[in-house]
Length: 386
Image: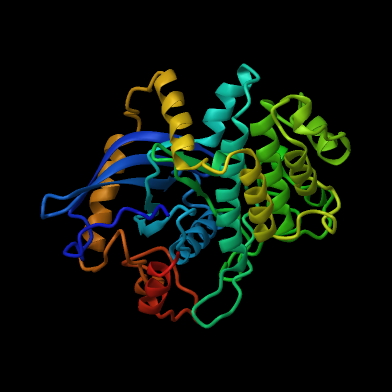
């Protein structure tokens, strides 16, 4: 099992400085930077810094959604989910410190492959979707310390949010659009959210939707990896919506003769437009994917994902470090460190207690009034995971 990097137990305080290195991605509500956390002992730890775009930081809706994402992210503790370590309001700018996955997104890998209509090896695609399903199974069943179901639905499962590490780790990121009981921002029925080509039919038809919408999206991800092309993408948004509802879904073996019948069956079950006939849970998706793995290649594992990531990174020209906004971000991170200096934590092993954030001076992430978690017990449960 791949665990987050564990820092020395002596490092019980926040870093003395964050040094931003380069911008990884920008778009939507935020930009993500690679940064180095520096400690007074001389230790260094690479992290990702997510920063709400300045033009959106003043909007109350985006502020609340950011707080929701940070609050939920600090609760989630699973090897297939990107960790959130800390979050803070710095003079009206909202910054989140996250686990850095050293590798690439599945989107970047598939975009390059789709240009050549190249298919991901069948065993590797099945392994990847099994790991994604493990993240969804954990999220869908997650409970708080009192045993209350958190009711999490990711709502934005897509290649953009599946991160692949050089070591072969597969992690689900970005719960910014998720539904969850701990959220304070109400998700309107008119707020569709998610990437258009990865929505379930019941969502675009504005019918009742539940966790099975995430499973449909996972099915699209698997189909596209296996078939070497996009499934529902049209020439414009209206055509994409029509495809989601009406397009005949060909078995991926139509485009990839290496795919056995049982894999076609798995994909068809995940992509059934009737939620009641669809794979009913992420646990069921895990079991079906595992059965297919045993048929095609029982030895597939992280090394196969890591190989694809390494080949992809070696084939693309690495961009020069992004300088735009670097000085501003550095100043904001210095202020972040000043505010976090008194907080004790083990960044690689302990979650931060959301209750330690207060309104105003120390954080922009407001805890729920009822939030009172036994973090020591939670950490014991995490450490005992198989």
